[in-house]
Amino acid sequence: MYNSTRHFKLWRLASAVGVLLLCLLPQRIDSSCVPNPNAFSGYSFIDTDVTRRYLDMAPLLPDFPKLYQLYKGQAYKQMEDNVKEWRERICRLATEADIHYLVYIATIGELEDLRTSISNNRIPLSYLGASMSENTFARYLHRNKCAEIVDYLIFAKKCEPYAVKPGGWEKPALARESMQRLIQEGKREVIRVESHYVRLRYAYQIIRLAHYAKLYEEVIALYDYLMPKIDHDPSIVEYWILGHKAGALLALDRRVESAYLFSRVFDRCPSKRESAFLSFRIRTDEEWDQCLLLCQSDRERAGLYALRAYADDSRLVEEMEKIYEYDPHSEFLEVLLVRELAQLEKDQLGYEFNEKKQQ
Image 1 (cartoon, one colour):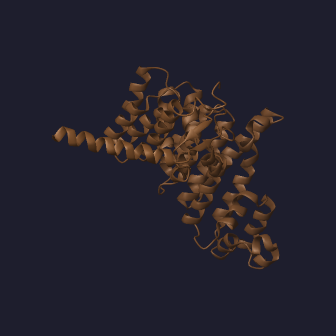
Image 2 (image 1 turned 90 degrees about the vertical axis):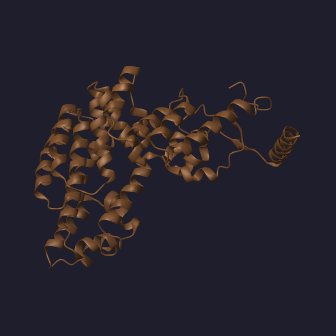
Image 3 (image 1 turned 45 degrees about the vertical axis):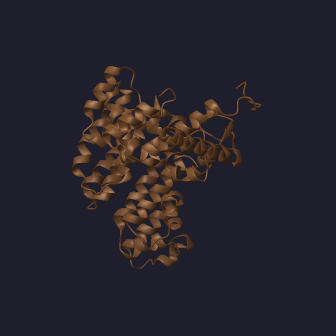
């Protein structure tokens, strides 16, 4: 009697779920505008509005193209996070738009004029035009005599041409010569400035220059020389630097050390998560075991498994079990579950009535 009642209840539950599914309108998943051009084109019952909570993971969820459109790409995410950190660490009164202007749009000439106005009381900010006098970030830096920050912004502008398009130099030898001069200038400034946060940003600029100049041994030497001299609170810039060290190690064929550092970047820095995933190189089980031995905490071990889980040929359920073993509260678990559900839908739904089934 007990088993009969139990089976009846299960049958009623299954019937209710079936009716619910029949009533739902599945969403069409298109393959355009996603990192993977061969992404699934079919039907899904997963609500894309629900997946918005995983915006930082968008590059790793190629089955949700609308999510990637909202994400706007890694470069945009890095710029957005950078502006937010400037605001949190330096001036909450400044608007993000004004910080963005000063960091990304203002010319070296405008910044030099601001620097002159800071050091010379006879040149008020109002003389510099609306782009500076009405900019809330510029006004804060001027009012508080933040010459170090303006000097750094000028230096970053000098570095920018060699970092934005390092593959497009017309004269590589001359470019590397200029980069090495900037590296030496940056090393002097790191020691001179009082703010450890500004030191960290100088370190990022010169380590990035060394990386793009393909001076891989120098990248590691600069990291080992500079980072112990910088005492700072946790910052996304720290992980940008770590990513360049990982890239240098990879170029030197030190894959295990590189993979470990990329796993840390992947775990801690959403704006660099996509590039860390694409740069991760582990070829054998032996290398994987060596990489695990480098991890210094259960969170780092969980992050390493999470990175591996995003490979196209990964065994998601097995990877999720290992992540749960090391870090039951890992943010990756829920995202991987959504990805596994999307994979199950791809396997089970839509082939019979999908006009793109041959693909």
